[in-house]
Figure (tube, rainbow, N blue to C red):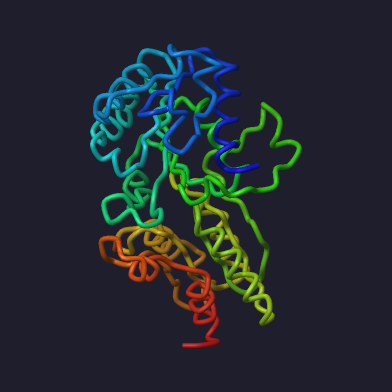
Length: 329
């Protein structure tokens, strides 16, 4: 099943299960979604529950937040999370903080979803990864799925969660097919928010990644295996809450940690994981410095030859993993 179909199925199943669930955003209805993720939902559920909005992120994110505060369960789609900066006050202040500020009386069960991070050839303003931005906000839950199974199980869990959830997809993964287990095909398949998944077990070096970087990390693990290096690959799935316990357990086994992300290096997801490992008992198990493999510290270039150098790829992860094992410079 493709990631696109997994997301579509998750929304359809939850809309059938709970009539309070509805979708709104730019082009989600008549056009079937800018990336066809909401395809067919208008025909199945009608204009009352699949709503095309004007081009005003601040406006429709506010409508979604208000609807959630009133007891509905909106799924608010941003055409890209770069555009969600127009609505960041609604997400961070209105959705993220009302439950706490109301003394726990007013929950806000809204899901903000859409593509996040770099696509291809869309320039600096459409290529940013916001995982670290939203991950720093108490009151939000932040998910960054990789596989079709991740997307289905986590989106369904996000829709049912009583808290505001920022659901960061990746445009480059929409058309990628993944195997689905029989349990994942069930309409009651949920994945726990806040739990990472070990995608590949190993004993020599830990590779931690989220979203598209899981693909590159698994490819790097394949390459390293040819040299007899057993890399463990952890798919974060959840940015906030962060499953630091799974990472700590892996570091205690492998004694080396490489964190891979598509975002900027400064104050990123990798920086936070590195800090938490160094502050924990897992630090005593490290036999090499923690390595971070990140996007370049520049606004994303539009020129393809420069864009290709601005984000981590498989050979770079292999090189850094070797360095952590003192196999190369």
